[in-house]
Image 1 (tube, rainbow, N blue to C red):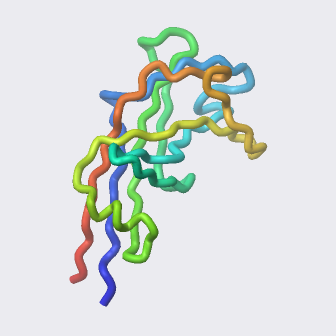
Image 2 (cartoon, rainbow, N blue to C red):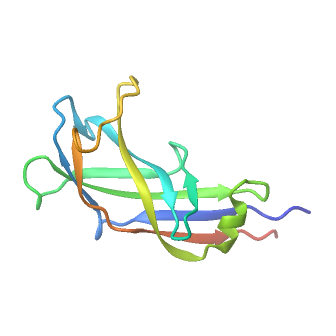
Length: 138
């Protein structure tokens, strides 16, 4: 009998959002661009690549940041099977503060990515959380 899948919840809540200042003129987050978490970083140096559908990002105007300011939060549940290449790292996880890579992708399928430092700047990037949820065979 193989080991059961393990679910991991990755999240950054609205009380500690990423704060972004938008400069691009060909769209904004939520209207022309979609926020995307692409990689999760652990303090031990290991990284997990995220599929585009693994994490749900939410973007909203930041009323405290002035014109062009946005807040980004995210939440996602990712399943890791017993033969997943990252399973050994996932087994070590319980509750952990994590880092992450954020990018913005054009909505119109041209594949264009916004360029940090040119199209936008990240003004505040707090750490997020990862929580392992084990599934047990019945």
